[in-house]
Image 1 (cartoon, rainbow, N blue to C red):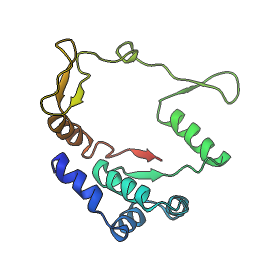
Image 2 (image 1 turned 90 degrees about the vertical axis):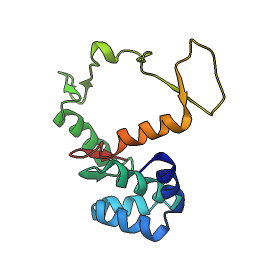
Image 3 (image 1 turned 30 degrees about the vertical axis):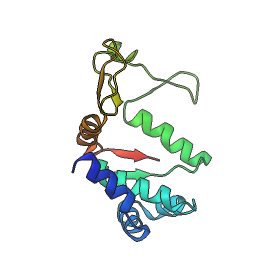
Image 4 (image 1 turned 90 degrees about the horizontal axis):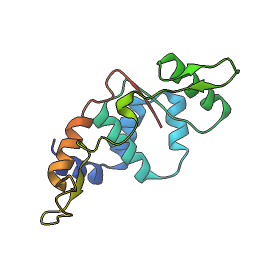
Length: 147
């Protein structure tokens, strides 16, 4: 699905379709937390990206102490952070190449006919969005998505 079709899918998704996707992909507790936010546009937005990114599980944080603790424990369990000697503290290290923006691969999405000069790495917006949506397709497969 190219970005235009996908964008149209987001815009045209009905509340009923979003509800079916969310109900089938979220656990009962996470579904209730999300539906508790009275914003159908948000529900459609999240449902469309759950559908696109295809996570194995979706966790919805309502900022409760237990939700925060769940996410803290998940970062350790997934190897994203390590516990420190000080109880409740963790550390996260980025790799050498993660320390700053990758200028060679960072692109500005611009409308057709717009240029910002030769020093700016730009790409046609439609082409760039197509690339982004291709990357997002199934990117969360095998992973948990946190909302």
